[in-house]
Image (cartoon, rainbow, N blue to C red; front, side, top):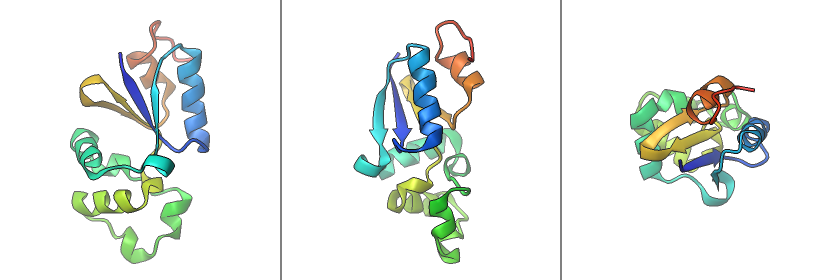
Length: 122
């Protein structure tokens, strides 16, 4: 199985995800939003898979620093434009599994069900 984990290396939730993957021997490639950004085509495919609402992190520091006009997101196109401009507003981590399947956020139970060879969520 080939997976890519997307996020920001210094994020505490990302560190939990990296630790979980490493403990369970799950091989992965890492895509750092800070260094490589997030392209529109990827974000469009993710929104089609899980919705823009699931991807947009409205609790983080970057979101809180945006002015109200930027926070007035009412549709997918506006959400994608914002995520392209400010990759830190993309919820972390996003794990992309073969064939476009996504896991969004850190959830050991979901990770175990889909990624762990033994299915154990520890």
